[in-house]
Image (cartoon, rainbow, N blue to C red; front, side, top):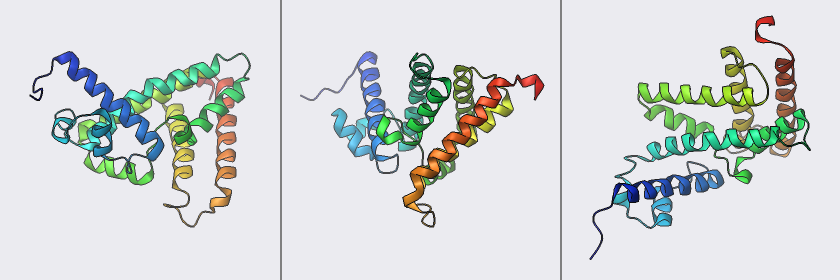
Length: 208
């Protein structure tokens, strides 16, 4: 007889397995190319049961992003606490790992994926997403020893996501950019961000 009732603890374990499996697949394949079927089959449940946890794929994607955030912050802290790394090298390695997320288990939204999710988010969900994103980038700045004002968080968010998105977008989404120069382009962007953050670190917010 199939099991038709699960305890709250069992449901939470299954939910966690879905999110963690989703994160692993989405980091490697991208959000768009990871299917619901791949996830629920890997966890060993049915499609119908999957949708009792997440009514849409977008709901799962948001949960994956939120679950990933503390892991990203912990990674930044590990780099900052590594005595073998200078401050600049620690920041550079962090940004490089994020730009090449598929190699490092970090899921990054492409341009198309951002558009898809944004269109389907309610106003409240969009507000929560932006708040949690700002909180993450603010905590990363603080981890880097930088005072995190609203303006600095906004700038760091845009600079970082721009580098990550452009790297993901070449050549499929941005076909007129030169793929052979993609890595060199990302490296220049990373070095520019590191230099910008270093200036922030040396300059208190109230002296801007």
